[in-house]
Length: 116
Image (tube, rainbow, N blue to C red):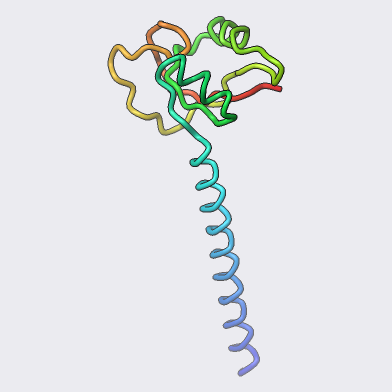
C-alpha cells in the first residue's frame, strides 16, 4: 500500500514537472518571438525593420500581385520579403488604414519577413 501511494505521488510530481517545463518553454519562445516583431505602418518603417532582420507586422491589402511587387522592390543580396502568415487574433484595423507597402486600402494584418 505504501509503495502504491509513493508511486502515485511520484506520478503526480512528474506530471506537474512536465507541465511546468512545457509552459516555461512556450513562454520563453513566445517572449523571444515577440521581441523580434515590429509593427510597420509606413514603407520606411517596413524597409528599416526588414533590414534589421526583424519580423514585420504590417497592414496589408491581401493581394498576390502586391506581394510580388513588394518582393521585387525589396530584392537584394539577402533575398526578398514575403508574407509569412496572418495572425488569428488580428490587431484592430482602423477604417481607411492603408497598406504599408502600397497605398491600397488594408484588409488584414500580416507578418512579413525575408525569403532567402
